[in-house]
Image (cartoon, rainbow over all chains, first blue to last red; front, side, top):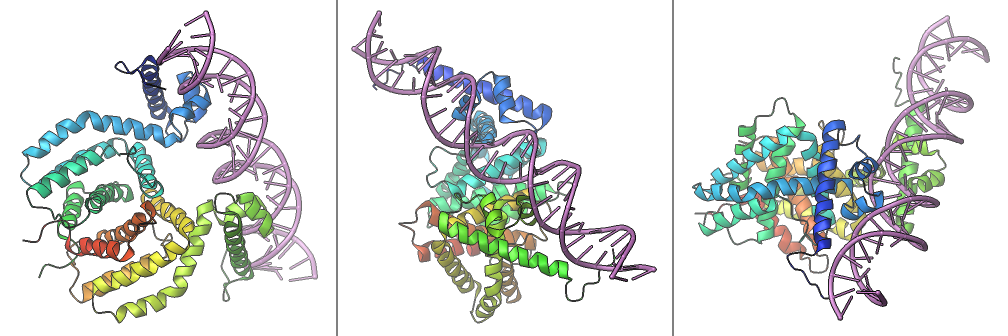
Length: 205
Length: 205
DNA sequence: GTATAATATTATACATAGTTCAATAATAGA
DNA sequence: TCTATTATTGAACTATGTATAATATTATAC
């Protein structure tokens, strides 16, 4: 019962190893054969574990994507947040963030599409959201906090609501891309979305 | 090849009959045994059609829900839009709409939860959205048009973007309900969401 | 009415996601 | 080394959704 935990037990280490091996194996297969064409059995076989074990690590196929993207984001988030501090206002921070994100999306559209769908599903379906942080949430939180500290963003509404709106902006920009990838104008779309985020739908009198 | 179409051919009529029969049968089973516990085979058997035929009408299980809810909405939309015209501004129109919607959600939480997830999935995954109008979209469009006609809502951004934001508001309110149904305060949440929709996240100077 | 083309239905078999469970193996702590 | 806990395995199982070839129904033209 009592946990020893000397810098993580052997078991923890092995689990983390397995996790990484599964993610790497799966992403490799996704790249080779495509996401949909890759089955969970193939992933299990390629990672040399039983199907049941695979599901023990990742309860649904999309969770592998989720883990991969979350990881990629985490690696760069410190740097991204640092860069945000250097920017003068919320608008420029959001534009930078969205530009960054959309570069990733355009690079791996299928992966991100599945990821977005999975994230949104969880947003609605899961009551408690503690552990299921998206890779984006810490960036979004940073934007929100910086903006509120400088008084630029309002503080009279629940934090969760503002955060949800930022999340909406991120997803809406991606959605515009998916709706028409050929004609998608990133900078225009991003500016419109940020404008709407900041100023709302009401006319300024 | 050439379509006769004398007020819809017999085939069209039969198809519509079948469709309605499937929807009614399925909703009955959902009510009796729950959505997840009802299988597509059970629905097919109860409607006395082959499984393949069922999938010919509804390619995924959620599409039955979607059709049912879309239908329910359509029946009341004319009346709802009429009521909206009688209201003085966008804010009160949105509050009325959201209050209405949330009554439905609270009444059939599971159904609407599946429905929302399905709708959002489609929003992202489907490139062209013509035929897949949600039951809500005409209401949302009415709110937008009324607000723009009176000059209350801005017209300098793409319609689709404003529409998406309204859709976000609808879904966000529902999500707050699902996150904590016991403590959910409908009127407060709705007011906050509408406020954010109208005024945006920036502080008013 | 009857022939014919187009469309819908049916039954069956199939692939995959995801679950369940009892047997087995590995690890933690004493 | 012993014991409790936790992880893995393999196998059988359920449900979605797809594919297909045979059959039935409908539309249209004659």
